[in-house]
Amino acid sequence: MMRAILIVIVLVLVPGLAAAQDAALPLVVEGVGTEAPEQLSLSLQILVTMTLLTLLPALLLSMSAFVRMIIVLSILRQALGTAQTPPNQVLIGISLFLTFFVMSPVINTVNADAVQPYRDGTITMTEAVTAGLKPVRAFMLDQTRDADLKLFADIAGHSGFDSIDDVPLSVVIPAFMVSELKTAFQIGFLIFIPFLIIDLVVSSVLMSMGMMMLSPMLISLPFKLMLFVLVDGWALLLGTLASSFYV
Image (cartoon, rainbow, N blue to C red; front, side):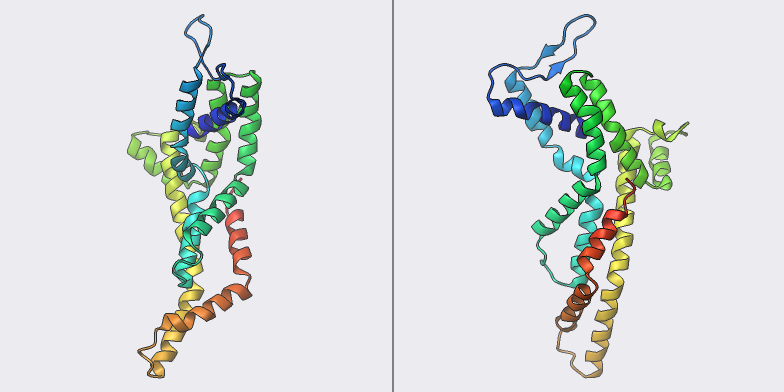
């Protein structure tokens, strides 16, 4: 829910802040009963925006494809045995932009159904949040296993739902995160196998030659890098990751 609110508020506030206008920006609070909507002051709007921006990392982790991307890439680095190569900044950058690539249909739908109508004044903030949550929620449900949904529904005390649309976000989000972790580790296991075989072969050869003082990792690293490059590993892995999502 906060993700949609953040997108709406940031897109509404940034143009006004850039123009440095003294008048209040078009962020309103709906009145009660017949009272007219009240505009928030500029300072309060800035405070709300900065507060919501602090929630962006948590939203990125819990409601997007970022978790699967970063875990798989981290496991790949461990399997290669290259320590801090690629560095964390590179892995995070690849994961972030690959996440934007995968979720671009969801982002476009949120923009068309929620952000633009709200900026045009045709819908209220509540309606914009509701409309913006629908594609994000559908994305999470498409990646979530039924067993994980049932697990958290049982923990929350829900006996059952008439349809998948009745599942609350308090159940969808943790179930989505658990499913993403499972999928990421399954992909990581498959990535590890060929590199593990190379390590075992190199270790066996060194042991048979009596070279027990030589680190097998030092010898196997060039072979693993050569294998990864020959099979065009980066394109293969990133393409597989992107196509592993149901959008």
